[in-house]
Length: 321
Ligand SMILES: Nc1ncnc2c1ncn2[C@@H]1O[C@H](COP(=O)(O)OP(=O)(O)OP(=O)(O)O)[C@@H](O)[C@H]1O
Ligand code: SF4
Ligand SMILES: [Mg+2]
View (cartoon, rainbow, N blue to C red):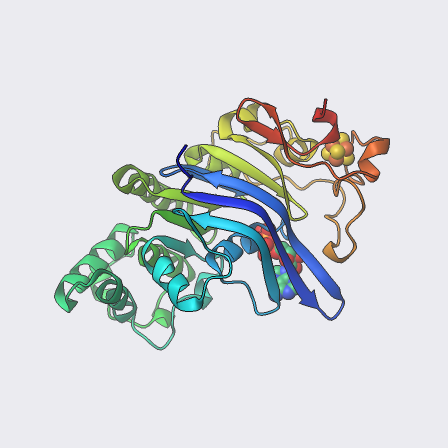
């Protein structure tokens, strides 16, 4: 059997803080195939961003990742910065959640984009400028030719996000991690960006990890969906099947009864109670004090993610034989 494009196994991320260790990501296992789009959902603080920053080797200085992250057959965790930079520039790209902090404020957008192409793809300046401008135009920057030589501060929040996406697409990555790529955008531009991502998959067979609060976005693009709670992946399966018939009580709560998935803007519903403080995670299932179906075993034993049906997995004692 060939290896998946990305194989995350036993991934844990811990942050050292003055109040103690924060277990931000807990034992995540996930394999992604070329061309596949996997959506990742979960409440704020559930570990979505940190899990994929760990994949990229970009955790904050107080963070440590353990486990294994194999990409195109090689281990990423523990690599030196130079070899990670080579992979990140060419094969693996991420659009960050906070686009305002991701472009270098001291360099024009054109310079930042052309440099990537000159360094990683060996293009000369003219060809690099033409290709960069083409992408900027394609992500829907209005008057891209005029804005190309501007500094990032002249771009609005939405334009930043689109410029970041254009930067991430420059080298035609095999895996694009997009963290809330449409959050700051209006509905029309959102639709353009999603269409662009769909085209990218079609043209280059790139795999996409789509981290989002918007279930409509997932329903429109993702083949599979992973649901995170308190740092752990609690449900994983084909998006249509998970939405139609969620197996985990948290997924059911998250989907609510009124969310319309056939419309854009199917935002997550608020559910009763608070997510647990990561410094004081409850024993057993981290969801047990909010779960309508909790029973004795839930407060003492941690439910691991296990296969519950073909292509479906859930981390719940109700689903164990
Ligand atoms: N540098 C850090 N030091 C300590 N804790 C951190 C650090 N960075 C993140 N965390 C914690 O890690 C946990 C997971 O955060 P993460 O950013 O992955 O959440 P998220 O699911 O992406 O949320 P959101 O939907 O709000 O983006 C949170 O409890 C967060 O406070
Ligand atoms: S393990 Fe128990 S508390 Fe956790 S989701 Fe399942 S039923 Fe609810
Ligand atoms: Mg996040």
